[in-house]
Image 1 (cartoon, rainbow, N blue to C red):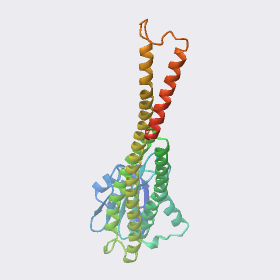
Image 2 (tube, rainbow, N blue to C red):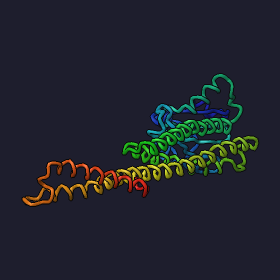
Image 3 (cartoon, rainbow, N blue to C red):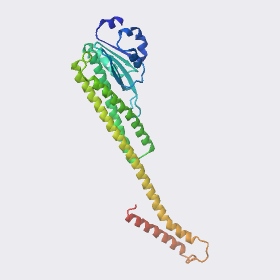
Image 4 (cartoon, rainbow, N blue to C red):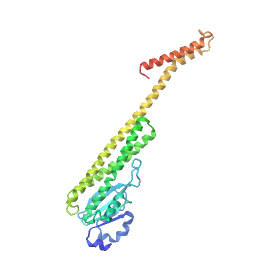
Length: 302
């Protein structure tokens, strides 16, 4: 390994955070400040880009595609990179499909190291950003389903799902904004580190990330709409229930008055002892109830 590091040839060194102690004896031959290596060994760094003259140090975050259901949970992995004119060092917080895919292309000679470390970095970042797309589409489909359920059958469980998506959407939006700033800086002219013919490719990745930011904005609006629809649906259902209860109470009130009058403990109530009194009173109560329902219907209270 020392011979490769001293040769001056283009190389790509890929490792996980747990592998860092194994290369510390060669740190004098590797780019990067000790503080940058310390940051690379911590899996919770925010996305950033640091310029150190002869090399870049950048931190990006990619989706943990092993945990597929973005609508339920959002897990990301850290990717720290050291980029010089002749080497690329990638340090992952776990297995990343983006890095594995590029490594497979290099092994099959579909992508050559002669393309340069900046070409390798572009391939990794392009794949990393593109992997957000299908999951965001899944998220949008989940929001459409929840919106339909919020209109048809508003339940407390739906509100919980909407708020969960809102929390993860805010995290995705923050990640997309931070990483867009990094791609904006990488897409600028920098002598010796990123070759001019690679700049349009980095701008293309920037366009994809900008689309992701716009999608996160759309999702934010969708979440707000879903919350409003859910609350309105709940209020409408509550109003319907209150309307029915009010009508029942309004119909029962005069009937209760009639039964209360004839239920008083007096011996002399007109018609109390008439043979047909019971049926007359019951018939009158039925006519009274039906009449009130007709009035409510014509008044559009039902």
